[in-house]
Each structure stands twice: as C-alpha cells, then as structure tokens.
Image 1 (tube, helix red, strand yellow):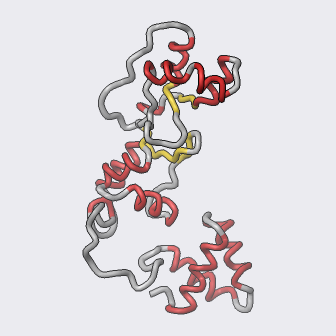
Image 2 (spheres, helix red, strand yellow):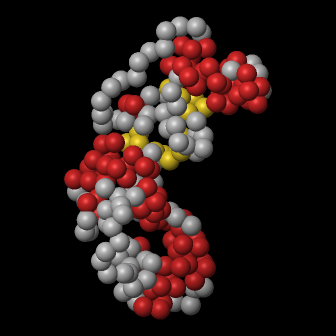
Image 3 (cartoon, one colour):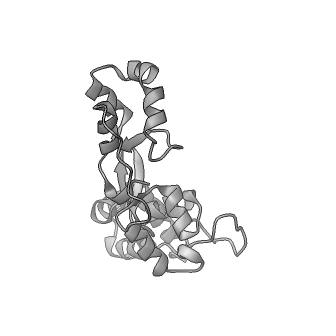
Length: 200
C-alpha cells in the first residue's frame, strides 16, 4: 500500500540520487537501506519506497514513520484490492481489463487503485458475489457460455456491427478501440462473439 498517495521512489531513482550505478548501489548500499526503509510492496518485482523515508535515510536523518490506519487516498495493489473486494488478485486484473473495475494507475510498473474507488465498488457492486465476482477460492456456480458472457461491451459491439454494413471487422474494431479504449484485437474478439451468438 502507498499510504495516502504519498510520493514514492524506486531503487533506480535512489541509485541515481546517490550518483552510482544501480548495480553498485544494490551490491554496496541496498542491504542496509532495505533494513532501515521498508518497501511498500515487498513482494513486487519492482521495489518502491516512500520518498520522504528514502530522502531521510540518504541525508542521515531520522526516518519518518508512515501514517497509520486506512485512508481513502491509500493506493492499493491488485492483491490488496482483491482483499477489499473479496476476490483474487487475478480477478482484479481481469476486471480492470474488462472494464468492470477502473483501470487504475501505474506507479513504477505496479498497478494501483485508490482505496476510496475500491470501497465504493465494494459497496455498490454489480452482479453476484462480494465485489461483483466470485470470492477467491470458490469455484462453484455455473460456467460461462463463453469468455465474454455478461460483458457490457458486447452490446456496444453488436450496435457497431449492425450499423457498419460491409465495413471490415478489423476497421470496426479499430474504431471501437479508439472510441471506447482497449485493444483493437479485443474488440475483434467481441465482434466475432456477437457474430456467433448475437452477444448472448
């Protein structure tokens, strides 16, 4: 978690501020730094740190304590978001891709979501199950007829297909991607699904 959307820095930025190559910093300085300053997402491939804590360490000052408790402006990664919504981290990523959840923002290659957005999603969740999806670890319930079943973009794809006449699907998909976001390839799949099943 990034408490209250505070500024952060990664290890490359820290090495740059100390004036040494990243490989040198990791070999020589990182062990002591990591003992003194906790990474905000310790299990992430990219380690990031609170900027004020990093600067205090580099300047030989007392390292400030991070704000405690939950705050609406906290930034949560996919695992933390999944805990709030009661779903798996993979489902969080899928929801963000499919538009069921906001895309979030990327901080040093880590996708994060504001706590207030996630809490609002939890309190106003569409569909079945906590957070609008099946809780993590539960595999019960009927299987989808196809991977896009229930996707609201099917209606958009169906309308575009109906209005397009003889326009090639790849051109329709490109226009939909530009207008609504997502990749043209995804919109091609949605258009194909509509063509096969009418979006059902």
